[in-house]
Amino acid sequence: MQSNVRDNVLFSSPKDEAERAAVAGTCVRKLGIKFPAMVDSFDNQVEKAYTGWPDRLYLIAPNGRILYKSKPGPFGFHPEDLAGALQKAVGNP
Image (spheres, rainbow, N blue to C red):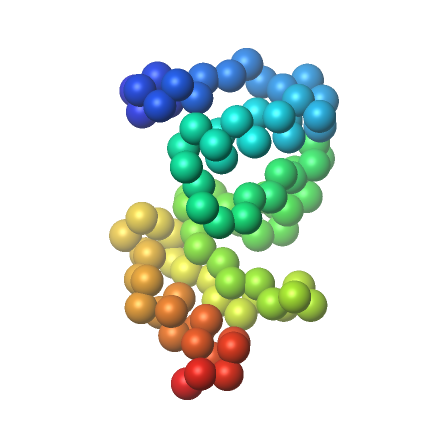
């Protein structure tokens, strides 16, 4: 939690989806996140479907097919493997 204090991203648990979206937007801005962020619904369907804990990296095709799933992070993250999957997905072997 020290990093949350340092980065000034401490929030009470959101009470509804609008609050959840507002918190996510604030975190994206304050943390300078440069890639698209998604906000899960209150039933956490995406979290349950993709097993985001411990941390994982996914590459998901527009049709919803999983093209790449990392091993648990952070030690299971291998950027070169994700880069290879991205290149394959866009047709650059």
